Image (cartoon, rainbow, N blue to C red; front, side):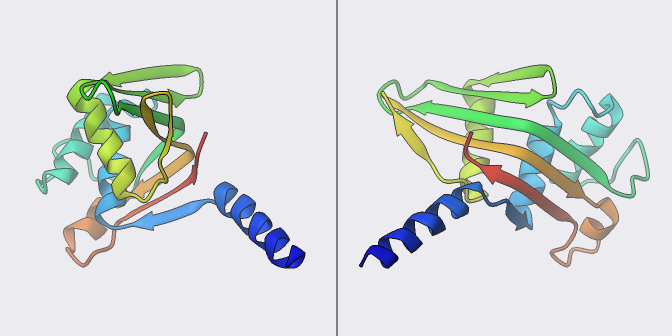
Length: 156
């Protein structure tokens, strides 16, 4: 019995710290939404990212692959104050905040991406670290389900 408990504890500890790998529509949405706030992407690239999610042709470039990275994304929703949505995105030393409807968009996308929820004191949290998304406009244009991949570590 002790071995089962020990094995379960080790599995859960490793599972929590393992990198998650997602592809498809959840990866596309996550990369586009986080990329919209990234100080590491040009304004033109951020505009093209939005066009990817809208299934429209790019205007500003023939990107081979667009890389979206964030050190952390932490979102919270109130389960008492139902309108209390906020997210903090960290890109190196730069912090960006989303509130309200824009935060809800990111919060819901994290859930769609399979990020486990956590809760405390009237709030529900969704958080990831080490986000790295690769969005390939040419592969997305093939409409075969490829072209969007993200890895991240669930939790703070």
